[in-house]
Image (cartoon, rainbow, N blue to C red; front, top):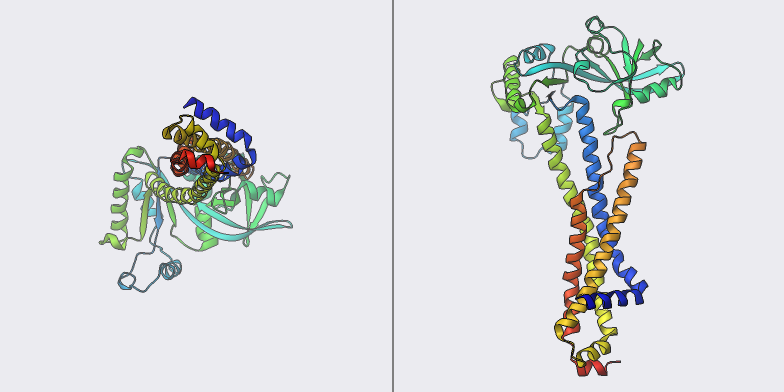
Length: 419
């Protein structure tokens, strides 16, 4: 085996261009796999960071349009049609009273409601279309994010519908630049708001991130901007996250009672725990990862076919050499081992280079993500390295067997006559 390895290294060094071209497909395939898995690990760290902003001990209550009998009976309605129909219907049954009742549950520590809207925020000559969040003062008992400057609004300001605002990091920069925004007045829609705080940079996620949002008291948003008395979302903090599923069922019972719902199918709300949210994300992300790996595997297969073809060419070029070796006493298994080792060596070299290239690509992606304000951790999962080396070895063996067997079965007399 050692002699076969020495011979394979000698042959590869003698034909550097052919060696490079042979390994290129493997390098690209393995690099893509490593890059995908590294980027996936970074994306998971981003999701974890976003969930930490709410806390891992929270669950979400959201309004939804319940399916009607017509929706359920229609076999011709598309999901796009349903989405358009749903978006045109406002659910107004979710109220502050619901959250008050939910807070009486033994495992509930605190809660707050959210409404959202769109408006133009302006300061002097600077204007920007923004999303604003209206939430109760209890938000700041649960919210894990911190302020760069200023303060949160108080219970009195919330109950009194005060026109105060906390700016997301990007909005503060867009409207004020280098100026200190604290104490200044900005216009949101047709109303003036006093800036009382600016959030630390949180990083953008999913389009318009937390840094591009205005935060105002719930009563102000409901009464002065939207003209509503219902909520869109409720955030509930749990005392014991291990009892999340049981608490979720208790919340559903309360909401059904408050909303006069007897059939769970007609629920006009959804209750999602952090565990359920992560399970959903993991299911979706795992599917995407598998798909991307399968696509990357195409280049691995192409690289394997390339190795097989090159090895057939090598067998043809070295036919007389094979004949001479067999005439001098080399057995079929010796010839088979030599060519198989050469094939495996090529793919392992390609695998190592692919791992290095893929890890470097993952590092570049992490730099770009971090520079964009995302909490992205650079990781190269150990299993991805094992996968890369293992796959490259398997390809070397799998696609090298046929040429190696072809070489080992050559008739020595016919091979010596070959020119």
